Structures are given as structure tokens and as C-alpha cells.
Amino acid sequence: MAQQIPMVDYLVLGDSPHLVANECTDCGAKFFDRRNACASCGGTSFKKTDIATDGEIRSFTIVTAFMPGADNYVPVVVDLGGTSVRGQLINAPAEAANIALGQKVRLTTYSIGADTAGTEAINYGFEPVN
Amino acid sequence: MANDDIWILGINMTKFGKHPDKDVVDLASEAALAALADGGVTIKEMGVLAAGNLMGAAAGIGQQLQKQIGQTGIPVFNVANACATGATALRTVIMAIKAGECDMGLAVGVEKLSGAGMLGAGFGVAASDEWTPSGRYGAVSGFEGKLGTDMMPGVFAQVGMEYLHQHPYDGADFELFAGISAKNHFNSTMNPLAAIQKDMSVEQIMAEPMIAYPNTRAMCSANSDGAAAAVVVSGAKLRTLSKEQQKRAVKVSASVLTSDPYQEACQILPDVNTLTRVAAKQAYELAGVGPDDLDLVELHDCFATAELVHYDNLMLCSEGNAVDFFLSGATTRDGKTPVNVSGGLESKGHPIAATGIANIWEICYHLRGEAGPRQIEGAKVGLAHVIGLGSACGVHILEKSGL
Image 1 (cartoon, helix red, strand yellow):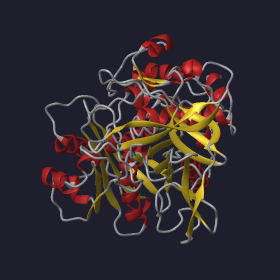
Image 2 (tube, one colour):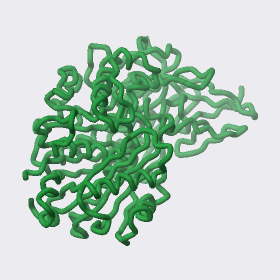
Image 3 (cartoon, helix red, strand yellow):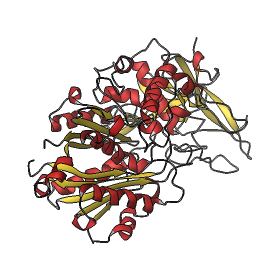
Image 4 (cartoon, one colour):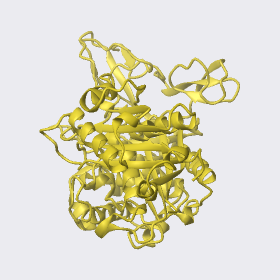
């Protein structure tokens, strides 16, 4: 199997792909990038914590792609068990009539292509749960 | 007028739009000289200068401006605070006067943006043969189109849609936001300084090219060139000036600048709500007025989706009721609380660093009773609001002179 690399370092690949955050051990605030101190409480101790993979759409937009050949895309704010995550709605039409606020979604992954060494970059997205 | 009160003595905005023959220094000079003339004073009387030009923040617009209109040796503060840059310049001058460092100062904001296109992070994909993690998220590719959007129309679209998730609305969201835009475009027809003066129906606005649902092109702020400047004076100094100057001076009853307090989701979608609400609350307390006392409001409608949430954030309506408030007609020119009678950023234009002073100019224009055909009759109290992503929020409450 070809080598894989996650699109971002807070995406954990493997049998059950999920996101991981740096959680402040004092107040529980979660961050996807590294922090010197917690933006919420100032604490300086963090631990890795796994984020739920099921959630609901809290907001969305549909960005019109003006570059020839590019598809419109659907940025979403998803609430994953109390943690807000950014991403895109995938495996669903990019049409407002088909997207509902509060819609249940789950995290899934897909390849964004392979580099010259054959390594595939894997991104995450959210697909509707019926 | 108490000694420690703060007043706007003179103020001006250039026409917003395309100024191909003028650079930022020309535009800043035009606004600054006109603001000084409006206040009946000269650059020689200014004790401090604060100036902003976001796109050229490293160039030092303050000193460039001095070389054009008068190098008097006063302290210059070049400020940059995203779309709140103009308000930050004004706030800086007000702080200097409040601190007793001087009794008069000049704040200037200027930008050249026409033809700039969509603002935001862009696609930023590093050209490399091999996927190489970089940056604070160890990303192998740019986020845009892969993990959402950092471009402003989409960011603010999500801000507006999130409000409708928190406060569900049974009607059509697209039409709702287009309606807000239609109100502002109608208002622009009475503002000759607006970049775009075109009355547009809800249907016309919805038929414009979609940029980021539900924001069509007409619902996005117009990138334009322009400048605005204000002369600020202490109450003690104003008392020594002429009766006419005192009469036209506008009292700054509150000048507040906030940044965003931590909120759970602020790392993934800018939270423009909390800091606005905090700023508004502080401003109402400082000024001793409430939302019901406001005769007009200029708020930061960088996109139609943003205007809706700020009705609530500025407490113009009861919490959660921004949609009903708008649909009641409360924010039209003839409504209970006219909002963006200038046409707002969607039609007046949004030359970034000028915006936070131009909105103050609009309020002053009405409080002085000089607004001609678009005058809000009997206006005595107004509020100007601006948001810079990151974030910074400026709220100023202004009152008509009692003279």
C-alpha cells in the first residue's frame, strides 16, 4: 500500500480516522495548533485528546469557484461533540437546497493526490448521515 | 462642556470609489486638509497624529502625510488593526487627549483598494514535488477549498448562517439577507460620496453572481479607494474656540475598542459577536444612553450577512430577534432605528482604513443637521461600529452639541 500523509497534523489516519486536539488540562479548551499558553485560561499544560467523529452542521456557505474547471465547495462549521471544527461538506451536492443547518454529518477521509514519491495526501471532510 | 469631554471638531470623507489619479498620500491629504478646514483649525494646532493605511502598513502613512501637509514635529502613531484601523486611529488620538498629552489631534485613515478582488488568505499552496508539512497545522497544502474558506465573503456568510442556526428562521435565508442589502443600496441613492449609487430590488440582488452563498456580489462590500479624517479636541480647548465651532462640534460620548475574548469556536470561525456585544455594552454605559436613544446607526455591513448579527450584538433588538427586527422595517430610513443610511459598506464602499472614520463622519453629518436630502430629522444621538477580523471592534457613540 502506498505511503500516506495527513493533510494536517491534527488528522490521525489509520483504521478509524479522527481529529486530535491539544486540550488544556486546566480548563479543557481545545486547540488544533500548538499554544504556548491557553487562550482561555492561561494554563500551560496540555494533553492530546481525540475528537468525536459524528456531529452536526452549525453553519455553512457555498463558495463559487471562479477558476475554470474548479468546483464550488461547501465550507462548514461542524460541532463534533462540543468541539467546533472547520472543514467541508463532501459526498453531497453543493446546493443550498440540499444542505440544512443542524444536518447530522460524520468525518470521512479522501485522497487529495499523490506526490512524486507516490505518497498520498489524505484530507478529511464531512458527509451527511441519513 | 466639561473640560475632560472629547469632541469631534472637524471631519471629512473623500468620495469613495475609483481614484486612479490619486495615490494614498493624495487621498489622505485631501481628507486631512478638509477635516482641518471643517474644524476651522490648521495642522500647526495639532498635538498628535494617528494614521492608518492597512495595505501599506509598513510605509508609515502618518509621516508621508506630514510631508504633504505639514511637518510640525508632533508624535505620529501609525496604526494597523484590520478593518478597524480608522477607528483605532481615532481612538489613539482620543486617548492622547484624555491622557492630557495635548488638547487637539488628527486621525486619518486611507486605502486604495479598487480592483483588489476578494480579500482573505487565498490559495497559498506551496509548489513542491513532495508533500511537506508546514506551518502551525503541519499542513501539506493550502486550506482554501480543502478545509473551508478564509476568504471574507465565505467567512461572513458563515457568520450570518450560524445566527440562523442559533435562532432558527422559517423563511428563505437568501431573500432575508438580500433584503438587508436592498435597504442599503436604496439608501446609497441619496449619498453622492458612495462608490455605487444604484437602487436594487431584492430580485436583482439575488440575480447577481453568487460569491459565497448567500452573499451575491451586491451583498459584498465594494472594494474602493478613499480616505477619511477627523480633528479631535478636548472640552477645555473647545470652550476657547468660537461659538460656531462649538455649535458644530459633535460630542464623543463613548469611544470603545475591544478585542475578542476567548470563545470555544473562535479558532475556526472568527467570532465577531462577543467583542461587539462587549464594546456596545461598555459604550452605552459610558455614554449613559441605551439602544432606544439612538437616532441612527452606522454598523459594519462588510457583507449583508454581517449586518443581521450586529442588530443583535449592538442590542438594537432583543436577544435572538434580529430577523424579526429587520422584517419589521425598524432599520429603514423611516424606521425606529435607521441603520446604514449612508448606504453601508455594500454600496458606499469599504476602503479599509478609512471606514472606521467615514462611519463617524456620516453620524456627525446628521447630528449637525447638514445631511441634506438624506438627513434623519432631529438626529441627536448616533452610534458608529466597525469590526476588523482577528479581531478588533470599535464603537463610538456621538451626540449633537447642546448649543
